[in-house]
Length: 343
Image (cartoon, rainbow, N blue to C red; front, side, top):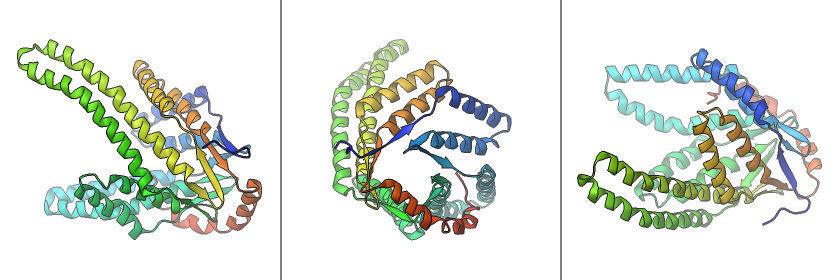
């Protein structure tokens, strides 16, 4: 599906040179402060990428306070240290600790989504997350167990429910998002990816079997020389499988998501995503990590260039009305979100 004539394209104006200066300072100060500065690094990075993303001439904002993020991380670290020490003294606590983590995980996910969405804004209107604990417990813990019990057969359903839980409980101001993608759509993507994976294994299995049979009679150098090409061949193929799943999944979810009557459009291509992953990985390795900012910028530029909004009516009128409705509502949540863990 191609974007309509009245679609509103998202744009990314980030530049490698600008972000490199932010990134190198973040890395150096995080190392010098033994990780304390990582909270500020996170805020500066997100603020740059959101501030470089434009829709209809206006950029997005990231409004988080790094001090709150640091406090949240210190609370989590402190809790982990206390529980680890208690577990060492009383081994039975290990089991209790593991069960507690399972039941805390959905709450942590809700808090993280609350924090990140509430601190993201467009035209002074904040995004929100309003998911509740019990539905999150079923989606993230109940369906995870179901996936294990079915030996992975329920994984596409698990994936669909996670994405639907996040999207359906997200809102822009007072208007909520909605995802209409069906479970069958997710199974279709994973089924095709599984077929391709099996073809890859059929090609590689004879080679690896031959390596196994010949390995007792081969020197270590000969073994490596024979196995390395098979390993190098498998990596691009696995990257293609991942790229296929990522692009098809992203396009499906975005194209089936709406905000009131406004639809979204994504046109990611597997070939281009795979090339981005491959070239980015190669560049980062050869530059010893110095080209990480370049890789992040070019990936963000491509992803955002494939996103558009298909408005039903005047999008400016919708945003103006939303600003009036959401004006007083957002302030009521601020005190509650001050204690977010901010991960």
